[in-house]
Picture 1 (cartoon, rainbow, N blue to C red):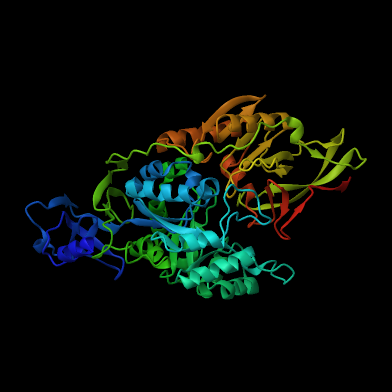
Picture 2 (cartoon, rainbow, N blue to C red):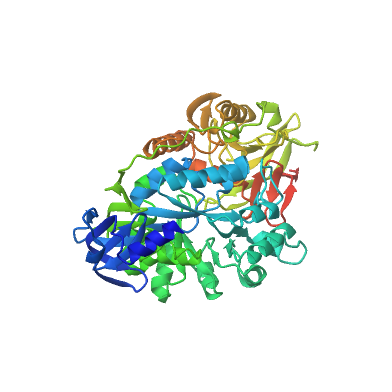
Length: 596
């Protein structure tokens, strides 16, 4: 009550502003106007815009905009921040200089390892680093169907616990499979997810989607069955347009490995589509990519280059995302009562950010953080997350009982255009001593997943194509959405070496050749994050990918392509700790088809 009364008095001018931003051109994303205006800030919030002289006192600090544009802080509408491998503090150091002051995230990766306590810790840490983390409660965890193994699952019980959290914006990442089943009536919806929908409705929380490649009756059934508000998983402009025409907010995704921005912006400009229900998100990004291209600022800049009006592009990165998640009373515009997240931009077309104000505090200037942001001391179970023994090469083979010297197998074929998509490749492989041999010449390699959360002893091995390794192996304990250890290599000996190195360093990523470590990246926080400065993380990421390319890979980002092999919501195949998954039938299948 005291805080509200203070802001009331500040808004009335009875308390003088802490700071005033003077001499700017205000980009009003509500009205679409640009006009001269000053901004008065009290504590962390905006109290007035325009002529704010009556709010200025003798102790009011002045921030000079020098005629530059005043833009709201940018909002990423859907991001798994843990994929950057940066702790919340280090992630804030990466985001703030690029103008991103708010994100919506499920914290699903750290939850599966550390539970609700780890989620609360992340929210607290981000808040101390001046980054707004709005929490989208995962529709269920694990997201995989069939269920892979996590340390902590998320279901109706957890939804009841988190429904009242002030950071909770609703149910997040509702995968189409959870709602429509197989779509033909043979496999029904997930009953636990339906129970969670009721909890959301009882608490007036909205539902947000993940309807990859759903069209036609499957899309309309999904919408009718959920009351879903938005989607971020459109794989083509036609799919984007269909979702918009069916009343969904659309978030155009531009991640570090999946690039959908250009074609969707061209669809908007060619068809003269109204952008009032279109926002931006990045979903999964690497530190190296953000430092090279930027974050949402890059999406705004690129959209303008493609012909979108600058104010519309800015609206998509600010107000629309805030409206999608019904947080526009807090962020998304430079308006009284909102958090004082303000960017000072010198040219709208180039969208060059000169200064960033977050929570009413100048936090970055010309691409560099200007405040001290130190991570807290780490302790607890997330610092010891590798609950698994070392593996042996003989644990990591594909065996067959067939009395044949050759067999036909299914290999997951990575799409060079959309690395998340795995198609079916049939290959013929040699059998030696009942073990199906991978083939470097045919680019049919082993891919293995080793469970590391509950000591189940689960080991799954199948085949992968598209990585083109001619030697060695790569491995990672960051592998959304279950973060078991995933590895690809030319033989079991190399894969075992890579996996054991990940276990030995308490989580991380590694490249090996001849059973020797070429490059490694320790990730001690849950096996998925580290307190590493963004620029250093970018170097380590680049080193990993470059070392993998020297082993033969032609992929843009081999590690980003590998870590998503466990996602079963994207066709046609995936691999979890329980085996190879047919993502059309959602059944565990054998990679062996029969004798050749």
